[in-house]
Length: 74
Image 1 (cartoon, rainbow, N blue to C red):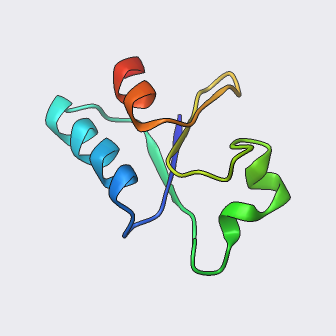
Image 2 (tube, one colour):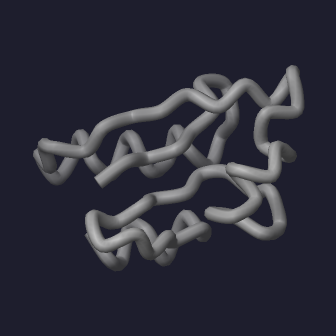
């Protein structure tokens, strides 16, 4: 699994804190530079059509794009 996140954004930080509190391992973190508008890149928009961060990409290719949904799924 991959967690697409922006280091200074609050919602990805919530997911990171949840992962740390639960002791979940094996999730690769991919930093997305929102200052350079990397979240609006067509490749990223394929994962998150509304260009929102965080996004958890599952091993089967599906993607979850809401903080609460990611935490509930984990």
